[in-house]
Image (cartoon, rainbow, N blue to C red; front, side):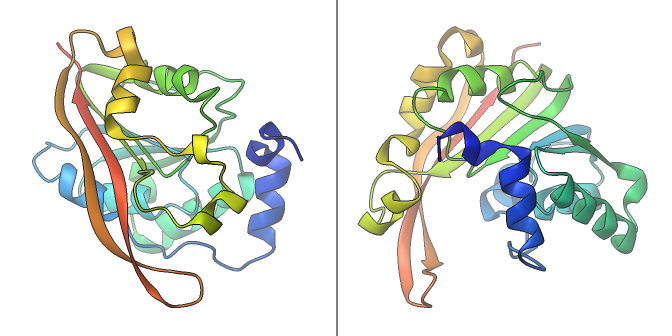
Amino acid sequence: MTTHEQYTAAFWDERYRGSEQIWSGAPNAVLVQEVADLAPGSALDVGSGEGGDAIWLAQQGWRVTAIDVSQVALGRVAARAEAEGVADRVTTMPVDLFAEELPGPHDLVTAHFMQLPGAVRPRLYRAIARAVAPGGTLLLVGHDPEGMPPEAEHDHPHDMFATAEELVTELGDAIEGWTIEVAERRGRDAVQPDGRPRFLYDAVLRVRRSR
C-alpha cells in the first residue's frame, strides 16, 4: 500500500464500515482548552472522523463545517448532530485534502492527529491555513516525536511526527505576519491499545491570522 492510499475514501470507508465506532466520541482535550477564550463563529473541522470535535464545537455555539474523505464517517457525524440537536449548526462535506481546495474562510480552522507524511505535510498544512479568515485562528495538534513508542512506527513512519516548532517552519510564509499564540510540546496521560497507561506528548500550534 502506498502512503497516499492510506488517505483515500476507499481506505477510510472500509475502515469505518468494519467497526460500529472507532473513536471515543469525546472532543480532543486540546481543542477544549484552546477555544475556551474564543467567541463562537464559523469553524472548519479538518479530518473530522466521527465528529467528536465538530459536535462539541456546535454545542458551544459554533457553526461547523465538518470535512473528511470518508462519506461513512460523515454519515455518522450527521446522524450524531441530529441526535444531539445541533444539526442546524453542523454541515458535512466530503473533501480529499490531497486533491481539493478546502471551503472557507472560517474563524477557526482545526485539525487533530492527521499525522501526514513529512513530504506532503507543508503543502497540505499551508492549504489548511488558507481557509482561516482574517482575524481567525488555526489550531493544529499532532503527536510530538518525543516519547512516541517504537511500535507506533508500524503504522506511522517517524516522519509523520513533527514538533510544533517544525510545523511553524513548514508553514513558512503561509503564516507570515500571523501571531503565534501557542507552539509547544504538551504532555498528557494516555492508554495504549492493550490497556496499559502511557504518557504522551502532543505538538500544539495555535496561530492567529492578522485582520
